[in-house]
Amino acid sequence: MTDFLDALSRLSLLRYALATGLLASVACGVIGTYVVTRRISYIAGAISHCVLAGMGFARYMQVVHGWSGFTPLWGAFLSAIIASVIIGLVSLRAKQREDTVIGAIWSVGMAIGVLFIARTPGFDQDLMSYLFGNILLVTTGDLWLIAALDVIVVGTGLLFYNKFLAVCFDEEFARLRGVPVDFYYLLLLILTALTVVVLVKVVGIILVIALLTLPAAVAGQFSKTMMRMMIWATVLCVVTTSGGLAISYRPSLPAGATTIVLAGALYLAALAIRRFSFSMGRR
Image (cartoon, rainbow, N blue to C red; front, side, top):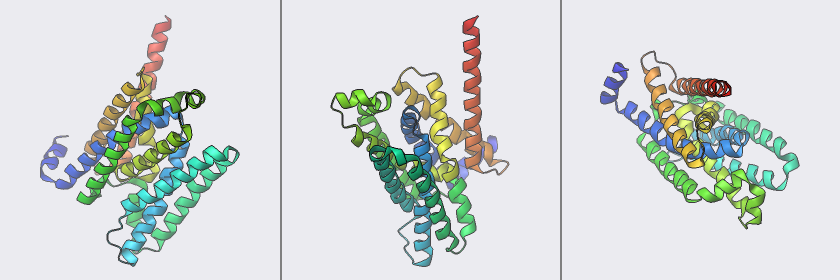
């Protein structure tokens, strides 16, 4: 830990990485709470894997055709929005085909991304960083884009807190009260897509769904209100992202994978504590 703190004071890339983790934690805590409560983790998983198509395309255009301004993060943003809208419309209009379409988007999105990356010179290293994340490669431009997405995600999530609450807990009652459920459901999926883009730089495409759901799941074990669950999920995200970065520094482990292992350990500990408390309460 001392080595990490010392390096943090000297290396700007570590400070960028820590700032990215903190920014991502806020969006993750808010939207992760909605995802866990609404039970749409499988949809979030499909969106996160489809992101590779946009990132691969952006990287291909950047390297092969010189589109310097079209970074992989922008490609992730566009593909995530498109995937969320398609999945949302299918979920609302064609429920009997929902699983098939989600599976298709999940697999085809990944395949398209792999094809573009395979046609891009030097694809091996980029593929690993896209799939498993490399928070140490965050640039100043990426940090500003993540901060902007963070403001949009958190601002919208809190602004429509009551509407999302109704959609998550009692969709039919919300419809009876005149709430445009379809609109808010699509908006929630779009916010989830933006959060996925924010988290891709932290833990990568493969692991993003774990960071989106595990802290919120732990927070849900000990929270009686949605707002309290959001706050605790955000705190836990901060602990896991900063802790994963610190733990992985000395042995040179992948920061993203270390972060997820730490989040998984917290989740198992929370289940054990919950079970122990329940057992003691029955005595």
